[in-house]
Image (cartoon, rainbow, N blue to C red; front, side, top):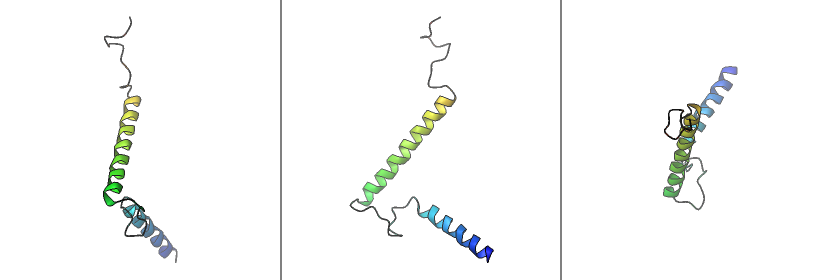
Length: 76
């Protein structure tokens, strides 16, 4: 009984994960009033913004977003 419940939950997680990036037409969650191209464009824009934010976080962590002490504009 417990194995069936665990398997069902695991299957549900896999299905939700696989359909999370789709436009939802297979499960009835389509974006009303938007064409497929608009949905895809929003998806691409969201991924692009996420990538920019990740790059900014990496730059801030490694201090690439600030000039170093050897930079020509550093006041000595």
